[in-house]
Length: 394
Image 1: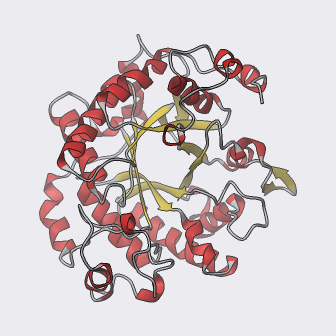
Image 2: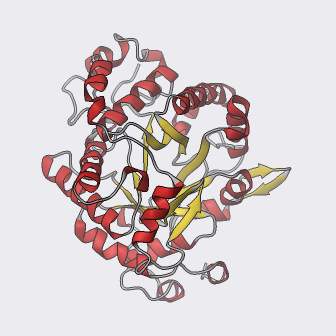
């Protein structure tokens, strides 16, 4: 069994997790995002935000730009920088905050938790104004990599009965119910929250390199069943899948995801009131498959992922809006002009994503206040309309 091929993808989970969760529970922020709370947040920016900066989705009001927390060093200085960036973003008109257990070895979730405490306890915001999203599926470290990865995995996951070695694919990914429960509980502790608003199964297509489509959907159904249970007990409000390739490849490809089939799994478990309401995938000026690739089938018609999501009532969040900065430089003049001749190429790239019909929120990684201040100038600027979007140069 290969363990640790991707050393940046593991996390420590103490075997005393439940005791830690219990002892820390009274320190957590109570509640979750609500229609009233997110509407109140929108109203804070009535004199500043452009009319279509905030969007209605799943009974909530979401900002068209969200803050991501993927990149950065695993050190105290970056922890503090992210905390400050999240606070600044929230003060500037962003109420969608995204993370994952494996981002910076749990540190990003903890920075968000610290930021939320500052926002609620010191700056007059309320928990119900923010849509907090995180992910589970990869095996991450706790703060820093251990010296012996295999021993760590055995001691942390295998011996306590959280996962078996056979459950772990590719040395780094697991989505069994027991493992996802462990990850959800750990994320709630890291974020210091009673409830997370959106919980994603992280890159489930990782499983498809090792198992059949039939087995994959069997495993995904078990994961969804576990997440529906956690909705019932109040640990999460909605769930989804956060993917990299799954929604960007041709239908029939070995690692393709059928959104319709996923929705059918959720409906089979919980009827029309199911919690599978969000998907996340990369979408940017260089990766446009969500719009251009007809790789989903609805009522025998081939449609794009965004069209399928609209038909099925699924909210789409775009990740990699700047593709780690690779689409934030030297953009063609005709593209810049069509998107409003904005001050920077980074703003132009974000404007493309948030203006795409069917995309609710464009996630942008921002680890510094300076990034927040530059990118969030867009809050005062309207996204281009659908007619203008259709006329963009190809």
